[in-house]
Each structure stands twice: as C-alpha cells, then as structure tokens.
Length: 120
Image 1 (cartoon, rainbow, N blue to C red):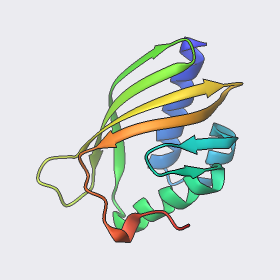
Image 2 (tube, helix red, strand yellow):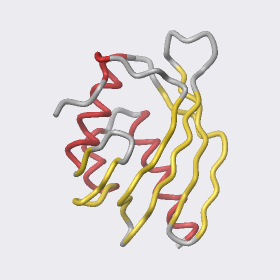
Image 3 (spheres, helix red, strand yellow):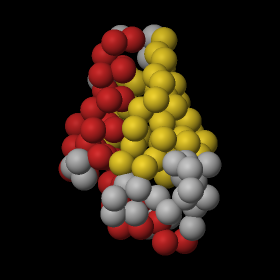
C-alpha cells in the first residue's frame, strides 16, 4: 500500500492545485476526518479548498518531502501564492484505507484568518 498511498497523496495535491474540487469525492472517504479543522466528510474538504482558493487565488502547494509506511503518509509542503515573505510550510499526515484518505492531521505556519476558514 505504500506506493498507492503516495500516489493518492500526489493526486490530492494535484487536484487542489488545479482547482478540481470535485475530485475530492474520489480521493477522500465518505467518513473522512480532518483533525486540525474538526470536520468530517468529503463536503468539508471541498468547502476548505474553496475557502483557501477564494482567499488566495494564486495559491499552489509544492510537495517538498513525502514519506510513507503501510497505510500512512507524511508530507512536507510549501504554499506559494500567499502574501507571506517566505512561503508558509505545512506538515500533513494521512491515513489511507481502501484507496481513499480517511484521516488527516496537520500543522501549518500559515496563520488562519476568518476569511478562509471552512463554512460550518
């Protein structure tokens, strides 16, 4: 599953960067849990992506490092297209089950503001 999990993670970042929000339905499980946002479901991913794209129209994520083991993936990325002097960094950890991302944990140096928090 290690290579499959990495391929899935790359698909997720590609979908985000190309603004293919609908692809979330093929990448995330129906019972997906985002621990940092405290949200569940694919719709929460779509809302979060749309909010980030609205706040930062030129935003794109660049994968810097990716490690995987069994059903887990750890990714370090930089976020380009924000007003920050240095591109913010994100660390995300995914759990994959049955070919879909089921859980996500993450940290970011991008300070969240009210304008791109996901809708309830």
